[in-house]
Image (cartoon, rainbow, N blue to C red):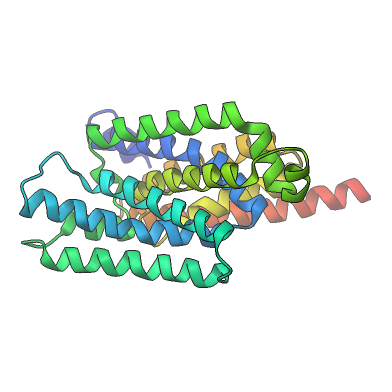
Length: 283
């Protein structure tokens, strides 16, 4: 831990990694709370795995077609938004079961990504890191894009907070109240998609759902109001990313996996803490 704090003052890649963790935590705490309340973590998982298709295509166009301005992160943003729009459309326009739609999105996105990776010259090490996360490889360009995505999320939530809360807790009541449920559900899924892209930078595609759900679930045990849940979830996610980054540094452990282990430990601790508080309040 001491060595990490010392090197943090000297090496820019550690500073970028810590900043990326903080930026991702803001989105994770807010959107993760909505996802937990709505019990839609499987949707986030489908969108996360679909991003590999966008990353693979962007990397292929970059290396094979010379479109050097395209980055895997840009491809991930486009793929995530397209997946969110498709899921929203199928929810409101199709009679197909939702789990079937999500499984199709999940598998198709991964398959497209694998095909483009196989056709891209050389070994796509960068894309492999996106599967398991490599926060230490975050670049200044990635930091800028993450900041822009955070800004979009915060502005959207500020403008549409009450409507998003309404559709999260009672869609039927929201519809009766005159809220365009389909429109705001689509907006919510797009916000989930942007959050997923941020978290892919931190823990990778495979572990996105865990980081999105664990801090929010822990916060839900400690608070009773949604705004407080968002704040606590954000702080817990920051603790998870910073703690995982610090703990994995010296022994050279996979950072993404260590972050998830810290988040899991916090989730377990929150359960024990909630039980102790409950016993004290009833005794």
